[in-house]
Amino acid sequence: MSGFSTLFLKEVLRFWKVAVQTVGAPVLTSLLYLLIFSHALKNRINVYPDIEIDYLTFLVPGLAMMSLLQNSFANTSSSLAQSKMMGNIVFILLTPISHHALFAAYISAACLRGLLVASGVIIASMFFVSVPISNIFYILFFGTCGSVILGSLGLIAGIWADKFDQVAAFQNFVILPMTFLSGVFYSVDSLPPLWQMISHANPFFYLIDGFRAGFFGRSDVPIEISICVVSLVSLFLSLGCLSLIRSGYKLRG
Amino acid sequence: MDDTVRPALEIDAVSKSFGAVKAVRNVSFSVPQGEFFGLLGPNGAGKTTLINSVAGLCRVDHGSIKVMGYDVSGDYQSARRALGVVPQELVFDPFFSVRETLTFQSGYFGIKKNDAWIDEILFGLNLTDKANANMRSLSGGMKRRVLVAQALVHRPPVIILDEPTAGVDVDLRKNLWSFIQKLNDEGHTIVLTTHYLEEAESLCSRIGMLKNGELVMIESTDRLLQRDKECVIRFRVKQPAKANSSPLETLLPDTVFLESGEYLAKVPSPSEIEGVLRLVRELEYEIDTLETENEDLEDVFLSIMRASPERSE
Image: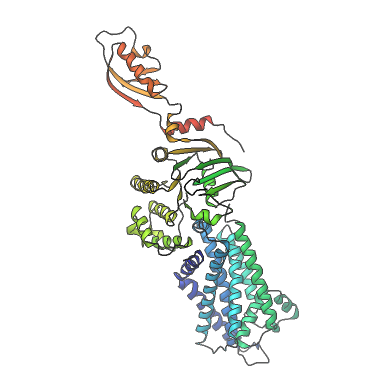
């Protein structure tokens, strides 16, 4: 086993050993969102006036993506912060694992957890609603990029944080608002122009819009723009995260 | 350089500060392959900072460090493959069992199928029956031994133990030292920091002493124990047939009479013991019991620490 594959396996086992909490609970939470919001709003929201998609169906990809983003962030941030604060990060820092391999292993595990949770949400939703799949490439591309972006943000938060409440603050005051205001529960076309503009400045919007396009074949902005924005943000955050790990900031004294 | 000739550890003019605190000041020394080297110093002397610098856990401000000839910064992967470190803090990953922990640690070094060696380490450290126990369920001493095992999984030629016996009971300590001694006999270089000076005295062939981040002494243990060696003789005499006019303690230099009925005489070196005994016999006393007390490493350590100047930041 290489350093990368071992660290990847260890990170996967770390969340899989508590899968009820790390995979089962987010799927259940998303289903509750789905049932409650769809029941409360199904007759009041006409998401796409031009195509026939009911609100329950519309919600599924957004909720799946939201769960994917939150769990990818949680996987890297909690693992790194916990290792740092408990001191067992030394077992990785003492080894010849390169910073590239370290980054890749953490992000790959975050992707796996994110995609597992998203798949769980979609599969469980199928008991209540039929979800179409228009383009599997878009689903996988935006799902993977979402995990890379949030996994990188999780690593950055884990490296930066000295206390667990700093990780929680990053999650509650940055990740959660950006996720909720990215069009999970609505199409941004339905928003007033100012809020549409603000939404377009949120990279999470392109993730959800592109991911949803993979299901419905329809998006709020042209899919090419979403692909470009998401690719650039993934690249920028990955390079930033790599450079932070290489510098040893808050990891090596 | 020939692999067998290059030093196991080369520390050259290393300095490290944390803000205004100078933790390590221009320290240089090397440790040849196969040596059991002790690094001693009071709390805050800079031992752990120096070890962390060797291990790559912190980056030095000045100087260079090589492990088996590999620069810990420029060729960090080769240097880390050559090095096993037992950290001072009792750290562990609560998600995994002992065997999983050791298997992962092997994998980080790119080692597949390491079970035979892992079993040998577990046996050597009396952990075989705990192989499948979760790390959380182990006692402090057992966790400490797992830390030692983790440092050994990749069979590093150089092993650094940073206070490995802190909080470990006597039996476990003996067991640990016999295992480490065996590794040293097999050719592994051992660098040890400890506050148990009797351990350093019995195990280390050479000792370096740090104070306020400076290397104040580096010497073979034997020479260190011979250094300024003062010997104390404790003896009891039978009353002579013809009593002297003056008490014995006034007739012998540097001798005191104790309440226990014994005499205590200080001589500058062991070679001068015979001179004292001759004098006693000449005064027609017969020696009943005799003991000598040698200065141990603790006495040497304290005298060196007291003699070294204090530094303020």
